Image (cartoon, rainbow, N blue to C red; front, top):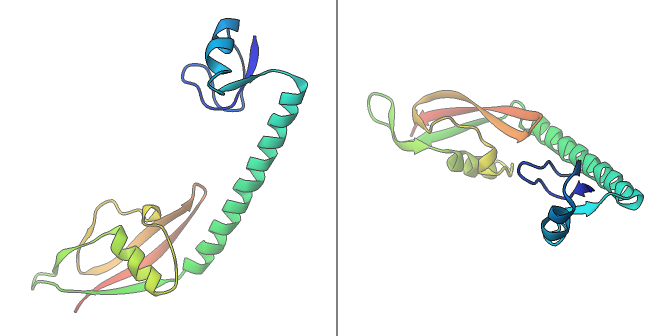
Length: 147
């Protein structure tokens, strides 16, 4: 029996894919759990409409991310911190701290979008990447200075 998968099913296929499975597996597992629908012209038409809707949604998200990237381009943050004599700071600057500083400047970004390999622990100038969308990223400059 051929079915259209509604969700990703391990070892069977990905969402939106047309796959061939045994009749019993489809009737007893896939259909009751709403993981798939039978292959028919109406279901294929619905699948195509859903793909178009998702494509439009992804395009809108990408445009929003590009607009936010333009807003972030050239942005420079100064973060005054307490530091020791050898330029080590007390504590560290994390993605949450950067998010709070950006919010003070009027830019609202989720902390999960900020890509820090490790927290900032020294005074200096840092280029921090922000992943706004799988295809769109921005760089901001952070100046960590002594208070």
